Image: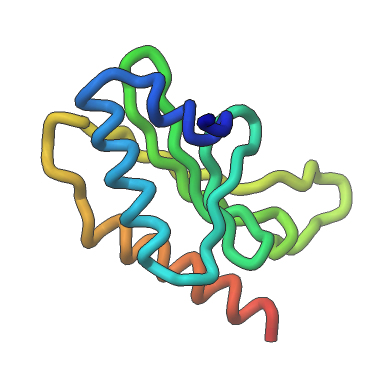
Length: 117
């Protein structure tokens, strides 16, 4: 029986399904401390409990989001404390920008490691 997380990948038609699965494998291979879970009904990837990235398909658009967890962002009094997002739209029929994705994830992981020290 599939979990709701697995169902997210399997319910999308090709080429979205193949692209989503490839992105999942790519993200998980960047660092063995990255975990895969379901948040807000979509696949999320976390690094030691902090949000790192997510995958989302909306109206035939495939999106990869990079997240800076609000727990490491300095809080200014009087402002709303939220996660920072950066999203890229991917064409499931084109080659993935693998080097850019890996670089963004490693940069985010380095940021999290520095703030833990």
